[in-house]
Amino acid sequence: MDPLSPERRDCLQSATALVVAAGVSVSVRAAGGPTAPTPGPTMTGPSPRQRTPGKPGDFDFLSGHWKIHNLRLLDDGRWDEFEGEASCFGILGGVCSVEELRIPARKFSGMGLRLLDLKQQLWVDHWVSGKSGVVTLPGMNGSFEGGAGLFEADDEENGKPVKYRGVWDQVSARGCRWQQASSRDGGRSWALNWSMLWTRAG
View 1: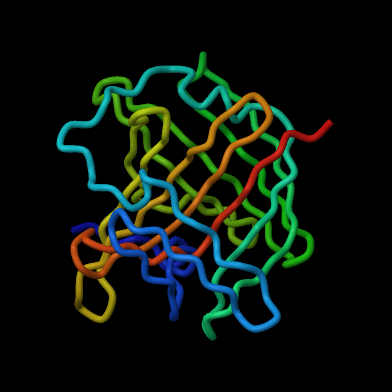
View 2: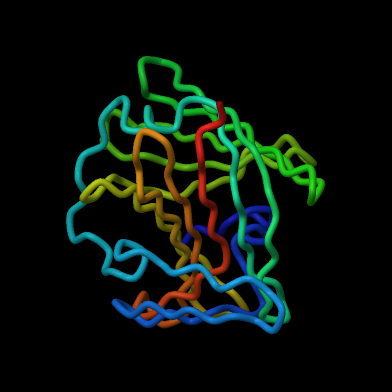
């Protein structure tokens, strides 16, 4: 098992999480706070036994300028609500998708770098923090299943295995959604900790 980099792990982990049983949607409102986001079926479903081969242009839907509504789980169980923005573009004939994420409200920025391994026909999602400029390795491997991008990585926390999952879904001409979760029971249940609703700017 290849460990995730500390930066990637910090981005993925949350001390307290909303546990979502596989196939079951859960919505919780913290006192005076926003309603917890509802995970999509790809997030709560099983991993594919055989991934759909990736192809150039799978991330073309992300090209352009975006406004992003964020809900991120805090350590105390409350959801933090804030706005962000991103600019994305594809290069190398759709083999690479580059995202510049900007969240001034949280003094946070970084770059999503999604690369298609043409030999394996597998997408790999990497993160670059604006504070370090270092590409995190290994990335999260993924594919598009039923119109949703499903990315996963394995790691350890306190000597115990943890799975991480990121999902792109609700893709349309005007928007999409990205969500992130973790599982400590081998993927039987998932703890959602971040949800982004993307809307095209302009």
